[in-house]
Length: 105
Ligand code: SF4
Ligand code: SF4
Image 1 (spheres, rainbow, N blue to C red):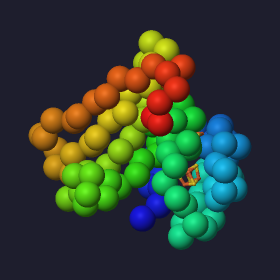
Image 2 (cartoon, rainbow, N blue to C red):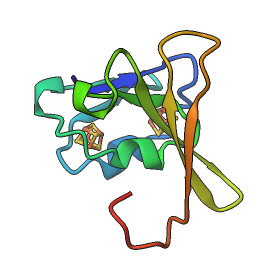
Image 3 (tube, rainbow, N blue to C red):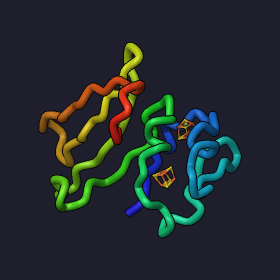
Image 4 (cartoon, rainbow, N blue to C red):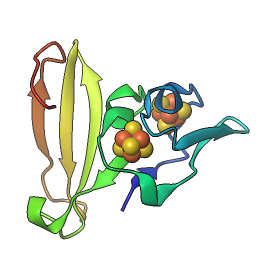
């Protein structure tokens, strides 16, 4: 499954379009759309680039599965990798990462 787009949050800034290494995203009428979902290899570059937290990836079963989604937002010069539960009321799991840290996140 590829990136999910929350159209209500999208600002139409184009940052995700510019950074996608597969050129899979496109702006149409100020909203981003996925052109070739099957070609998305889930690198999460677009999630990290989005200033609005409008993009997310559904986590695979091996990474928790069961409808959990991964989103990335920034706060105080750090990236917050958020695992979002499928049900309201369940706690999010958040990893705070220094974007200068040369790790895979
Ligand atoms: S996850 Fe990576 S390959 Fe998929 S749309 Fe985002 S930037 Fe492109
Ligand atoms: S980076 Fe986020 S806000 Fe900007 S166009 Fe993409 S989805 Fe919309």
